[in-house]
Image (cartoon, rainbow, N blue to C red):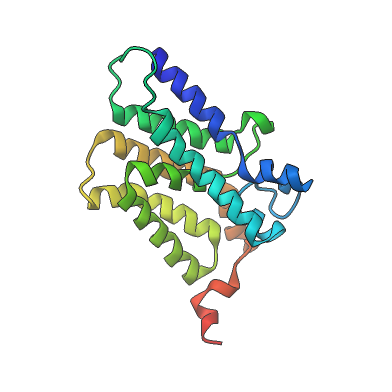
Length: 210
């Protein structure tokens, strides 16, 4: 149990290193006070530009990868019966939670999608690829980033089943992530219902023909 707790705490602390907020300090900005108020890659792109957003995405994906690929297998303490799969999933969820509720930034972070991608890149690369393709398809059809992210997350457990990944640990992870992404995007759902959600019109197929 000590092994699990220590790794979860470390993964959470790693996840709490918010790319947008950390890089924003070097620029002297807090993007939570700009745009949508979210400390994620989309708001970083809208308010700070492409290169800043790219750096944010790299940090956020990278910490998901490190939590699962580096922290989970660390040879700490005696083995306590936890399988490698559960250790990786626990650390991955902790990193995602750290991104959403970062201890270093008053527990106000991003929505977790980038870190989810990093975790899946290690746990189930083909599922991650399917998730990204789903995200891109919805984005080019609708222009709504939030909707694309929610539907891509909802596709995770379905993709796992389609690809024959029937391990209970993976399916539980996929279900939890899908629910969590919908919850963190509840503001987007409300704005979609009200017709006030921001849209990237330039990327929509509808506008390619103009």
